[in-house]
Length: 162
Image (cartoon, rainbow, N blue to C red; front, side, top):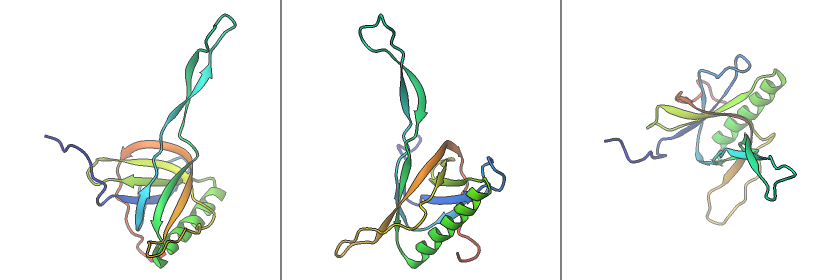
């Protein structure tokens, strides 16, 4: 019998810059200390298909919309700050070259992972602070295109320090 569900334990979050514009990268760089990732829902836009003779509006389904952003919660440390600064710089360079930044949400118990193209914030945002609390920054990624599920690629740490 198959497992009744999938745990998030040991899940990984990574990014990659396109080598060839429009082509899914084959390797993803691991980003550490991710607390949570926001969901990307696909809501269908409604198109008004009403006519003069209709007494009640009639609608048909239009394009799907994935919203504008997905929030990534990151434990701030010197290491995670360096990782995100590297990502932000690499994404800006890629954008100038007409290439996208891909993100992957990897779950070890699934053969497929979630992929999307997004733009990171221009700078690391200032998190709120609580007494006796964990410093967590919300990296709000602008979703450029939701690619959906595809064969998983395990994100790995860079071979050199960022």
